[in-house]
Image (cartoon, rainbow, N blue to C red; front, side):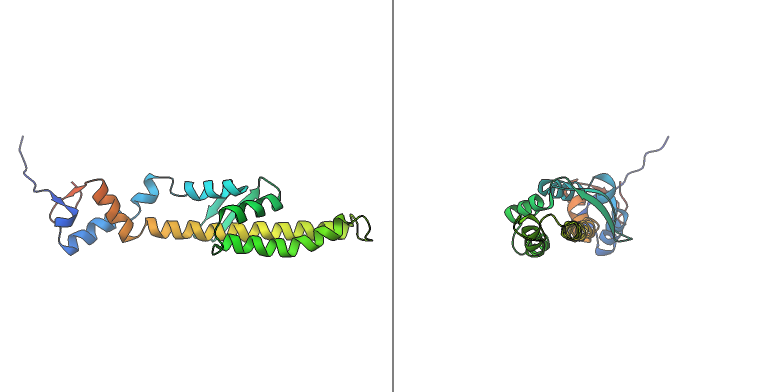
Length: 171
């Protein structure tokens, strides 16, 4: 049996090279240890959008409305700031959708419950869904990039009080 003595260093006590080595060791820690996408999924669910899958590398996202498109519109307008892309998409949807809906529902119009208008309504709602999904994919990409950034990794290391060898290897 032998005893080995190791001097332990906090992250801030390491040289710049050792800090960089520690950061690289932990680069994907935040995204492998937590479900980092949960808050984005919850935000989407709060407006009536269920995200069913996404792939940042392939820029792919799937989902569906759990409420009507107009209810989702109202939830976005009520809960998202005017500068948000989701808010802008919702406002565009309403501008495009409302005139079609009004014509479709006008009993005095020749277009009352017209199947062509019904198809246009569905197309407008599907386009709104796709726009919102793309906006949420962008949010997911931003969160991923933050969670793998040196800044976030440093925060994780410091918050967890990890200790290292002088060369930056985790003890």
